[in-house]
Length: 266
Length: 266
View (cartoon, rainbow over the protein chains, first blue to last red):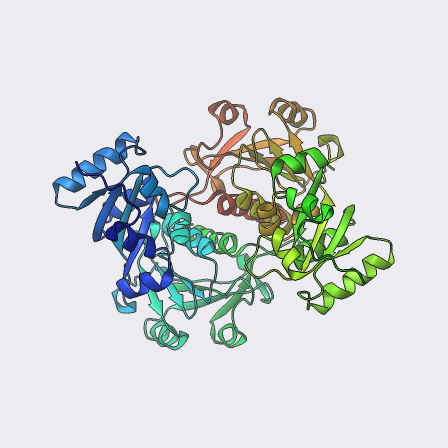
């Protein structure tokens, strides 16, 4: 069993490069760290270039068995020393399991649109932690896809993968450079566009919602553009205590997905 | 107008120390960074030791006016160079406004308990970002207080203050070393204890809830102890898609506070 002990090993250097968005974009690869996230990628049969293990750090029996099973069916396993693992880890206490995976995107037309479909659309969301947390909620609430528009940050940023606990590998993700493609798709497939805004005239639970629908969430700072607010079929706000109150974007997204699920299933 | 330009100035050194929990505990002070958070502290008349301004960085007119008004009523303003400001800033692009404030706690008996009171109780929550985001939701949803039990992290950690956008200075916060004090307080004041758990037998919207109540949230990893689950008046879970699904703790807290508000006001 060969163990890489040099931080200057060329494969290790390539792995470290994946911490930067530029290298992820160039290669189409991403670095997945942590047991939960790697197991999620394995379960969803995400194409992997490497499973990376630091045998001296990895103690979880479940993880070790999953690595052995993956190696048996032909996955490549790279074994490294704790020091080498630490050189690309984002954690204070790395648990010794990572992977290099192919970033997964689907096209709009690959999204299965049924009568109960709920899509989540993010415009120019900048914080990878928020993006990952929203992917986790999309997965948990059974929303059918996550559409990232414009300058929205990278769902395969290590911080986003971590906040998603690996669900970026389970949720179908679409990337769109601009909103026009989305708007014509929604018209064509009769998808109700639900815009969210702190200044919307109607409260979330006082509005008639129908499916299929897409929930539109704007950036942390600016919210949705006034043009998008006008274009949407309905505008909603989450009822709040007033004053300077506001909610974190991922919390607001979670509340809206919860409310939609509640209304659809009741 | 004197501007401190040395990182080795003793006041500046004391400010930097506040990045560490130990120094915050010893002094009872905390470092508040950012326009929103400092304005929130000023609005809520939080006792300040210093307002810290880097005049070369601070461009916001609203912020400059607030600083001038505060200085006029006797607050101490410390002016520093951009380099000195950067030495204690947690941001990539500091906006030049910070403050040294007194950490604010109230006692259980100072919480106003009325017929519609909703309290939020966190047990052993470890992530400052989650804690700050929950404080923001508590404020936005009009919950009446935040109770931090056991090993729960510091609400005056710079990461928590930032995630809270300053609402840790508006929401009444209680610190309790252990749960027994809370349990006897709840019995005495007839507060319904609502325990949240992914494994609870009943879904959130199928359970009879009444106020005054306290929502109990467990740690990110372990959730609530089985003893707390048994002690609570009711156990609820947020309906999800099944499988390995789970929600971020701050998102789950936001959904429960939203649902409580919806039920109370409808």
